[in-house]
Image (tube, rainbow, N blue to C red):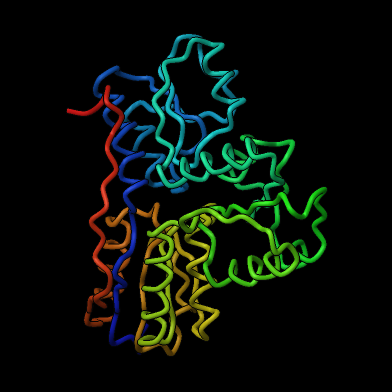
Length: 311
């Protein structure tokens, strides 16, 4: 780290409105109803967030069989399938829905295309929890398209009745050629009225490109399980700057900084700003580097809490 002279912080970075809302729902539920509050899946994909909420009394589960009948349950920001909702209702669980409104939008589009009897091509990572939830809206009509090769080979019963949806946390650049190929193969392809990739994902990807243009290496604060954080690493590398994912300053590999004078730092949409601050403080203290903010889009989006939790 002896060469490090400048640290540049991306704007925007870190929590988005959907993550803020999801975390607030769990916190308010614990305040109002007391512990335990059960949460289906990690509320967001970040261990720092999950561990802090566990300390307050949240219990994270993958299977509703592990939730007692009548308990308080929160659906995570990634959304769930109708089958999970039905299971929760059958157990008489008191449900608070922390699904990001932008994910809910995709679910609504899936239901619309299903009513129109269209085959739905869902661009996304098959095993990601968000995709599993969306897939559950119309499992008999939905085909997951992960790669350009999938777009080349996917087969549908009626090319005149086909639509496309997208996981909200994908790379805009990676998705564009897949979508272009699908439009080429299926000229009647119906698309949503608004882009499915969320504003925060797009803003953070644009910011990391700006950051890469000013620095020699980029660190992305985020979890290995976080789709949007992994995409930020890919975006930086796609414009020619090496990048690495790091969960906190404790996981920092000194080899990543060898010979680096100008370092860029950003954070995925589920990464707390405190973790970013601790990483920056560690680097500044050990290297003496000056810290700068790279200005960018300022976000002012807020999503309301469920009525039963609003103060």
